Image (cartoon, rainbow, N blue to C red):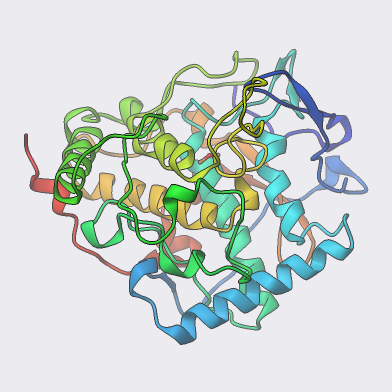
Length: 352
Ligand code: C2O
């Protein structure tokens, strides 16, 4: 059977793991009547939202995005406003840190075939909320174009102290245009920029092409009602998705050595990842890889298993209305009202 939308009535305390477990509250405001939450219908749009590569946008675009994000942060004054920045970050925590149960298991959207559709719907509403806060119905999130040499660093707009897009809880090595290591799991690699870029392109070729010739390898292992968490991740979720999180978050330090204890916040831990605005640009590019992968053709198509197609999530929209959404309604980003500004994909022919 498919995964039903998480029952909001039973949302409980989440757990920060990866070190001594710490309780953390991240449940969303509960709708009055969970059983009558309606199914979402994609509103008609006259114009597509076009998500641009973050390194190429204009000053004007950056100012708009900063403004939208600071308006969202202001909504945190009411900690129960579902549109507040912290509430939006808490969505990730609730679905990923054991706040919800499914049957007699904890619900976990990572390391399974729910990874791509869950994050797609999450960004969809996040983007609509930002757009509505600045009265721009065509506002589109920028994507962190880490699969292209010109995007293999933290996009500069996120590296301005005092801006709503800044997050002080990042590893200092991400600042000032350092080239990212898309295979980063905690060890700094000593190499030059050209070599790092070459490694990154090779790794993209492997994860998109060699290692993901068919749907289950790309999306991840089946996860149904009652499944145990973490059945297995797809190629892109594993690398570079996770390394980008770890590379951006603070240096992990969970024992009492002589560094400040950290669980990798913000980007390097599920419960806190959404507290870094760059999270949504990172995931926009992950989402773009879903489209790019299908465009490669052959057996690279969406899954057809009904348990995947009929799995559901729960979100608030920009009007604070609660909805249930289905995986089957998020397979075509254009039908959802957005697309990506094209950018070359040099990894495509980067055979070892
Ligand atoms: Cu939900 Cu990038 O993790």
